[in-house]
Length: 419
Image (cartoon, rainbow, N blue to C red; front, side):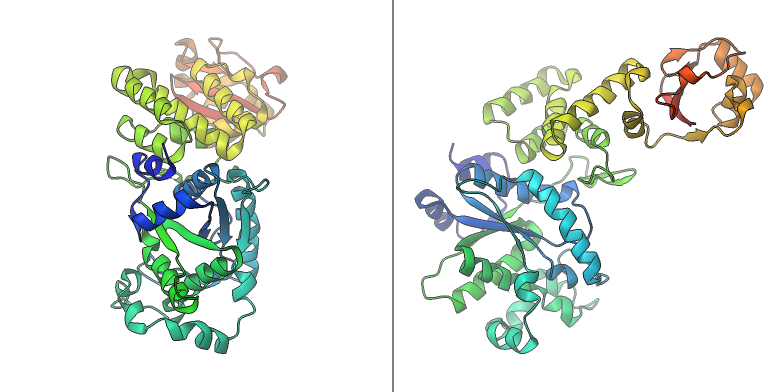
């Protein structure tokens, strides 16, 4: 299957500025193409992934990806999809974010070899540009009526848009032009909300470059969930690529909990599994959904891609330990990941090492009487071992690496005890 056919089969193509032109270009030469991101935070979240993973598919087919980090446009703010003005970030904050995003993007792309990816930062050309140059060399070519017709600007006219955000589309147009001039970059990829910015770039290239200059745009659909809720959000917030914000275990759990109605679509969107492999997993969803083979494949592929094989194995180990109750097999680091969001209690007094006292102090049981009943009924487990002795005292051996113990009440209620 050729690249465009594969992208269409996966449902990744939303809009193309010239479908025949793009097909002809890809069939006749190895091209450079780009996708950009503004450093509005110090980590990407999974909502950013699809355009970049699509860019990587082009790299796998012999084309050169350019990954553009918006060190300058991040200082301005993209009005796309926003109902009000963004809060301006400081130069220091943006630069801090740029460095973090670069590290995450390096995990996704191959930067060495014949078609190794190029990392660019638009602050390199915007940062030194003066106002007269901006107005004379670029602003002259973009009509106000043309800009007012853009959905991202038109939708803000009633609520208000500053001149700063009004000019954002010109800055992004200059990005496309600069990359066209420096790297012969002929295609820009972006989310569906970037259509207006992409076409502004094509307009600038057409007017400034020699006659016959050809460049193209391709957008990716908005990722949705079958139940109508927002993709990439959990009760605790966004699913980040930074392991300090979303641990590899949490990351794995997000994907493994994908609904049957969504999992095949996400396998097509996000993984590099072949058509045959995905179709086999699709059959599994239909014929043996209880095995959740498709969800496990999705979670494994995504965790390995973003966090690496070692982090995947750690996530699998935590998952297995929680399923089996074998808490003692986990390290303190793994305990932190697996029990990040459960209620916790820190032991500060020696008397709290008595299990009944501890259950009450940590609010695991409502009273000493209830605590004794819970223990006698076999409802209390310590590090996976059921405790039935109401006189049990916590020992040094109960401390996992001297830091934690895990108490479970009933089948699913976990509590983290800190020493």
